[in-house]
Length: 329
Image (cartoon, rainbow, N blue to C red; front, side, top):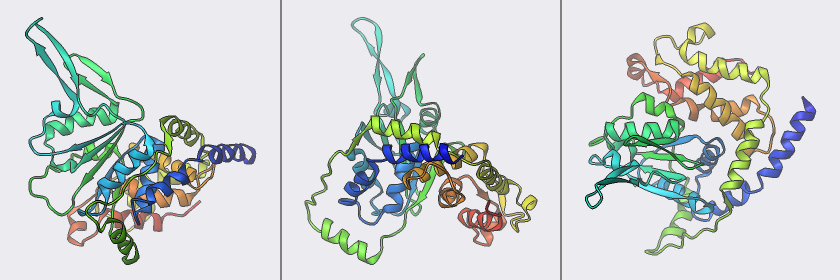
């Protein structure tokens, strides 16, 4: 389909005009986190929620807050704590004794970009309320269901080190996150730049709004049209199936996987690969797009067995072995 892909590529280049300026503007404040910025853009382009995991001080919160400033859209930062209640998140009914009626007070979740800071500190009731919001993009208060605004994106952070006072995220909730990002330390040169920028009690962290919601939604429509060849689709399905049945693909992973990716993983991998192609100015998906984004899509959807844990084999290693063992179309 050369003519069709050429037309889609033209649309990609036309509607991605805001990507490079936004990346540049973010770079004025966020130093050395290109991987994080690109993955946040993939989440925006696919309307997919993102879980950010990393030790404190790696600019996770700063990056999300700055991203919201570069887009003319709503933003709410929610600090998750063990005493948080569902009503603190989605809202509640308030009784008015004067007329004997209830009125609805909507919670802070009614915004576009939601930064759920330290999400694993919230108890199960709050996780359940957030689950409906993430999957259905709606919340129920009393007998009434309220639609959440579009776009609605949950960008959650968690600290992998300090586990005291935390609640492990349920598998069902983890599966709702399109991507799970593992944020690492900056390089020595980047940390020197961070020092120059932040080494003051009042750092200048102002950014300009580059785009608005309408541009993001138009770009998302183009992402949906990006061409995926049947061989690439088969490759994506093989990758996910190999995480469930490695022996079928003659991969030496028997006994290391408790359970693999769900059908939602197949859909998420396809959408994320399309967005990755969009960021690189292409109207078609290549196997390299799938491999580039695959670990972020699958690392939280593959549960390793006790034997794998004993051998210090992580889900990231399993994903890497799957990609290494499968033939590329």
